[in-house]
Image (cartoon, rainbow, N blue to C red; front, side, top):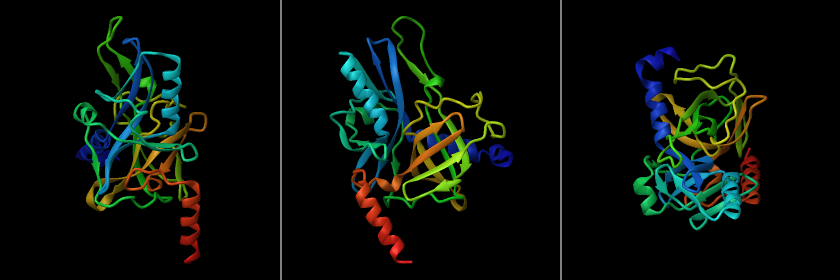
Length: 256
């Protein structure tokens, strides 16, 4: 780790991972940030779309019902998730969205472009880099009507400890974690806001990363992060149904 940090490889990969995502956040009254998640932008041969969790969209929908003046942004670009929804699944906790030109022009990031989609699933033992924008690392500029919101990108480098056709998980172990990226998180950290953050597989031979999943759940007490496999999302942005996945998995197993 020290060798790759000193060589500049790990900082470059962290910066690349961060460039493909941004906070999806909303405020009320022009001064109070209500909540945020994380969204990643992807371009496949068939479509360009954003991905976050279904529970992030539900939180936004709840706040829209409670307040008349909720305003949502993706990074620095205005974005309304509801009319731009492509597909959602409560079961997989995924939601995908069209990205309007105005949002794309101002959100402040890059789009992860893939010539082939979906990617291969994460498997136990794969080295992954993942991250997002936790709410406890979010601040706003001073004053009663702050002009800016700031959020730290927090990332982890780990090996997948458990995997299946639909998810991957690992324990990040704060007592032994390697943390070269500034102020470390407290033990048992609350990662709310990192939901929807991208997970990348490290491709050692090319010293690059491949988008393979999205954070959907974290358990602070056990320091476990769960990632939903990106292969559940089709090239057109549609989230695969439970029945379709089970059928595909059974067909795959029947060949062995």
